[in-house]
Amino acid sequence: AQRVTQPEKLLSVFKGAPVELKCNYSYSGSPELFWYVQYSRQRLQLLLRHISRESIKGFTADLNKGETSFHLKKPFAQEEDSAMYYCAPAGGTSYGKLTFGQGTILTVHP
Amino acid sequence: KAGVTQTPRYLIKTRGQQVTLSCSPISGHRSVSWYQQTPGQGLQFLFEYFSETQRNKGNFPGRFSGRQFSNSRSEMNVSTLELGDSALYLCASSLEAANSPLHFGNGTRLTVT
Image 1 (cartoon, each protein chain N blue to C red):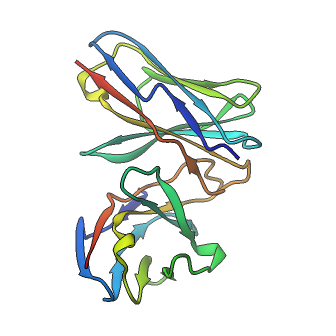
Image 2 (cartoon, chains in turn purple, red):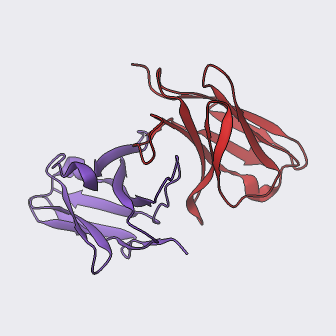
């Protein structure tokens, strides 16, 4: 069965501290991997996807196929990073279907 | 470009009734997906439509159905509402390619009493 685990429901850090949001997945085949973010009173939006290998808003995500993990990292957290973050793999010819994790609420304190 | 638009924003219905939710995708996006979001289950995939055809379906009962029109607009219908159907229903649009990023609307908040 396809499964996504985000072990931390809540994560608090201080501004300027490094942050890592964990994501482990169990998925058949080689899924495409995404991180989505929802800021307060905004719609759910794409933060980054593995295939792009981009750094968005200072965030990067490393795919570890051996550990089946796709952790999201940022070296220096900012207050505006406070949001709900979802890890979401999509597999094969998965049209429109993402398997979302339960999400991690990140709070960055001043 | 205008984003994904969902109407109405809020709905209150009673058990046993049926409800129809509407979604207008981003211009040029032909794939529309629907998700249910609840505090307990999180975000769960309902179904996806492309060119008026359902291509993918989640594990929801047959009371949940959808359709897509030739202009890519989509509707979702829930019949015989149950209390457990209370949720935020999100629509997302994307380009037609598999695993294209999803662009979400603000959702319709459905409350069943």
